Length: 111
Image (cartoon, rainbow, N blue to C red):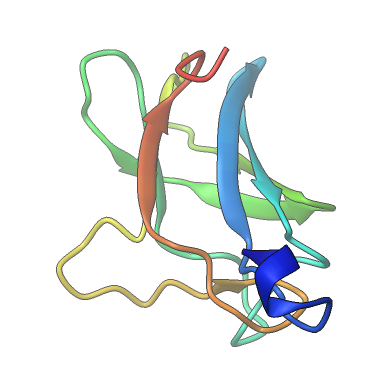
């Protein structure tokens, strides 16, 4: 698509995969180009869960082209979802200010 539209075309921050590091999940994006939040607050609407699928709100920290997620209620996270509500105040955007799409996934799904 980028070749067809030319070098000025910027794809939005696309979700690639999620991995577990200790009791955290690390979500990696492609074409992130400087992730930040549209409102200047911490990334919102991320939720994580253990195998049984009971999701809890996650604390999210941007680290380069990744977002690191933790929750005191989730000791062994393996599931993640972002913006997974009928109405969301999701705020994650890439360097071109384009919003990240909603998604859900699990650790190891793309290995």
